[in-house]
Length: 275
Image (tube, rainbow, N blue to C red; front, side):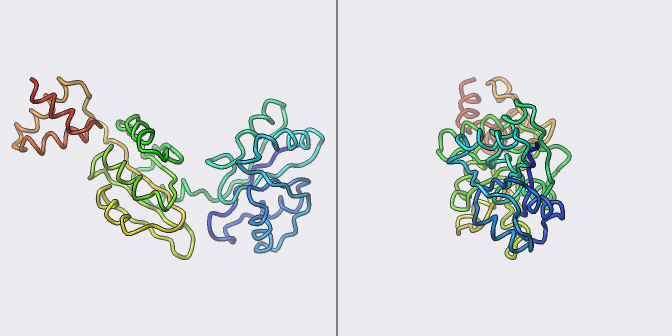
């Protein structure tokens, strides 16, 4: 009686662990996000899936969870795999884990490759503290509100993104965090056409305008401690005045303070000129 969450390769089949191969052969039930991909992975690994295979994806996750829980409670070994990476991390699995925990069914994991950790490691950005934000909202309004909440985040941030939305996501990030915020676009990690583009957000926007292909993970540096600016009018005016005293032209000072405060330039402009 156990639920096993198994991490699968994010690109190269030979990144699979021996434990994953063993679990595929011994499980009574294998729940897979895509059963065809599971069969292909098993063939690449030279392993025969021993138990019955069922689909477990976003569309049937709610309905299938009670069935898998019942199987585990009946003493079966239930193995959960997704298309790539660890189940429940921006993939199906959370509902089943929560249900098993509630029912006192043991839950364990077979560690495996992670796009989040791999992207962090190769990004060249600080990795001592980080947060994973998953996929940004698709629509402009919700996405802007989410990024406004993260404007003062000091930890390095990791996002997943679809290739056809990467340029729009980078544009929104630049608007929220500033054109010069260091970031990295990690594309097709561990695969034949792996690519890591590093630079300021505006530079990455210009690169992505030509089109992006493949699986994408974005890594963005957080606010450097001590450089934050409060968003109230008095603090904004004081920050602009401080930059002007250092010889920075007012227009450039307003832009810089807006980026530090995580607010539109118009807000800083109004604060300065209404004083």
